[in-house]
Image (cartoon, rainbow, N blue to C red; front, top):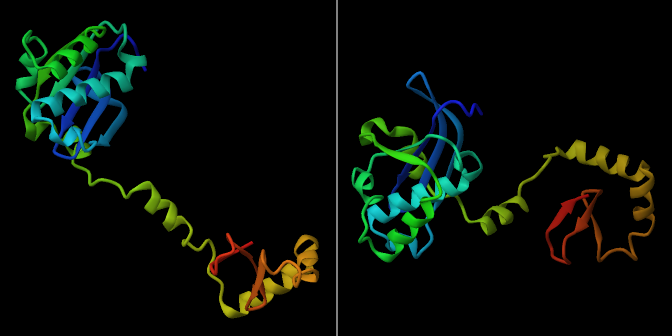
Length: 200
């Protein structure tokens, strides 16, 4: 981060996401410092396009507040021409007026860039939404860390029996059957008393 150079905040919005890219403008070229973006909440999906574009600016400024606050020059770059005058309007809707007030703590100018030249922020905002976190967590439970061949399984079982910690479990396996099981002579930990097992 070089505070003597102007900061740029490229923003964009689409029907399901917003994006913001913080950068430096050095010799009329933008150099990226950080990328950001997120999907819209169900309520935000009902916003007008002008509100979404403004939301991207507000979110980007707040996300990168530690860079933008007090900086002598921040240039907000957008492909939404209405945003250039929207920040100066005095009779805006309640939401836009609140955002306008929120942005008053920052010193910035708005610069218009046509959509075909505004590709970086546009690309991030239109990136397909990620899988839900719960689905990702569920997938993690089924991703094998190692795939063993049958002959490797038998040597793994032998190694487990020679291991001091696993060896104790093997000797007490009948009384620990709720927590451990053998499959192809390999010791597995029973997860949450379910049929699924995981290599231990």
